Length: 272
Image 1 (cartoon, helix red, strand yellow):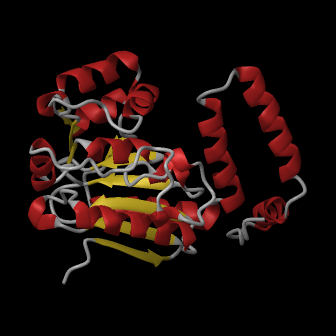
Image 2 (image 1 turned 45 degrees about the vertical axis):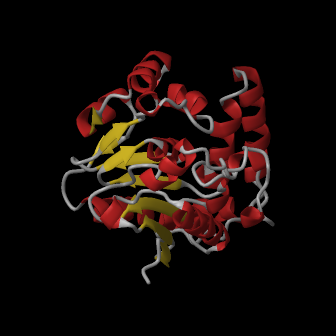
Image 3 (image 1 turned 90 degrees about the horizontal axis):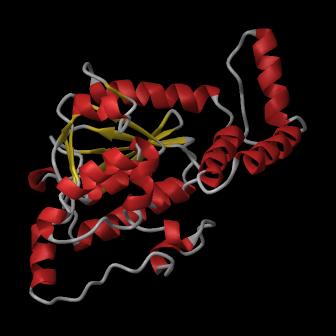
């Protein structure tokens, strides 16, 4: 039986793959469980950077239609409310509200990169938005599609998306449910760029460079700074940055960063 989500680490990069290509990686009950387990594996792994992608020709088309049919027929809505910590994420040190199948990249202390290789629909947009960096292939396409299913923006996408593309464009995308093709996604800032040649290999090469040359301590703290600053003011962010900078000067990674630069060699960071 094929694994519905796979995770493997190579050269400091963890590759998490949604692996139900015959259904365009639609998320059913079993795939939700597999995705939660893969997020936990990624959290505990020795990977310094995580890349998330989809097998086949889609990133994910969102919720599986059989799951939606069950809900439309009056079935139980069994996805836990954000903040209600589930057993799947026991032992992980992160705010409970961030630890859902769709938003776990926000809870990860490691940089998470979305390699969006095709259609990214419904909660797929949320998974991508929760990642720190997004790259698209030319075949990528985004559609929130919530109004077409008579539902709403899920799990904080209404908070995340305006902070990525601005309120007006977020309203356009969420209220219309329209398609956003790859080139437009790059133009509006939904993705950093469109990569045309050797898409996944190129994203993995970017991730390997980050894993090899960036201090894990620095990436963890910068990620936290970006998150904290989203609900902070400039003065608080500046003061917090000063405190963290002062602490950095006493770390082994700082000494190694300076030494490796002076000696013109790759750094050997330990994350401390």
